[in-house]
Image 1 (cartoon, rainbow, N blue to C red):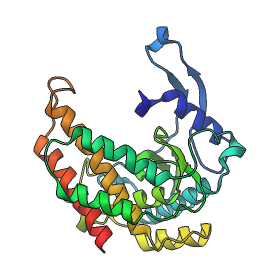
Image 2 (image 1 turned 180 degrees about the vertical axis):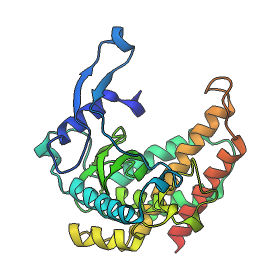
Image 3 (image 1 turned 180 degrees about the horizontal axis):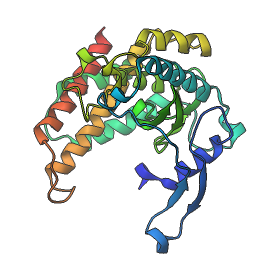
Image 4 (image 1 turned 60 degrees about the vertical axis):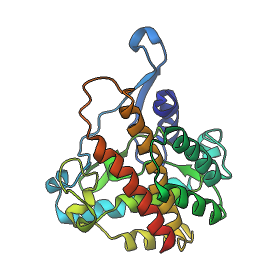
Length: 280
């Protein structure tokens, strides 16, 4: 339930509705279990595309792809400039020690779900703890900021979706996560439906341009951004291992069409990616 807390997400997008960050306006929250057996809210319909993989991007011109990329990083800068207290989100979470709290949480997740040894997971975790940078300031952190969680149209982002993981903390975690999802064709194993890498279709601004724009607009130093990219890969590996373990023991129900070998390999690949970034 904590991973899909609809009342919490409702609070966040309601707080941001009049901000410079585009969200779908919501019409209300229902917490009566007799209606839907769970909390839910109703949001406005936004016309546009969700660029969840490179195949969908074919519907977007190259000029608009570049414009969407510029608009996306501009929105992230604007989000990180918002004072959480001024929009009523000051109680969303602790502002300090974001990385140490996250590493503690996902280390526990990894240890609880570990089904086999992955040396790169242990090694990258150790290096993440040893090399943890000092957090400079705090901001609203989306937690899953990527094109697949946005509705786009007319060369811009019309709405940012999926705020369930949003919290307060180190804004550079959002930047590292975004850069990992800003992949080129050469980095995608199987381009096409389901690859989660819309930028592999080409035409978007580069990672270097994303970094340069964010630095110039926010004044934040991204010289240590590879640490945050490594943290993002390591965190997703821990999450992926939890999913793999639940499928492995049958906790996800019957008739689940899941390639367990691919899921297992994905965890190892994420852990190795984290190590490569930490050693670069």
